[in-house]
Length: 176
Image (cartoon, rainbow, N blue to C red):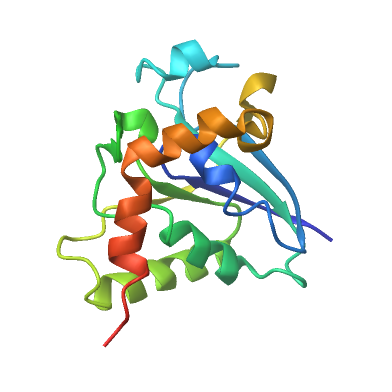
């Protein structure tokens, strides 16, 4: 039996690879959710006027790869204190969010958010929202598996985004 998990963490190109490498993860799809326009296109979403966020929808086997593990990967890919976008990608369509598909996911996401807020790791409040999952629209084919299809462009985009520096400063440091 599989479940879905949906996360917004800025540019969806950067959010696929971290999840797409583990047993128990069946599929990671780039897409859009949370907005008011039916069947939005990338061109529409990137304007920030549709209400959608760029997200990844993950199909996973919870008995092999637990939702809690997905949450931990998610937190380590984002700046949870920035609700105006992520890294170089600015706008409401790039803000971080967890879209929960059931009450168990909500409880686990809330606990995870609370634990990270209490950890002292961040100097500002965590503003990442936890929202009910909404209709998911799969992004255009050229956005899917971008890190595999266009590895050089993907690498360049990730490197210039500031994401890697933030991750290194925030997560790779030795905890006292």
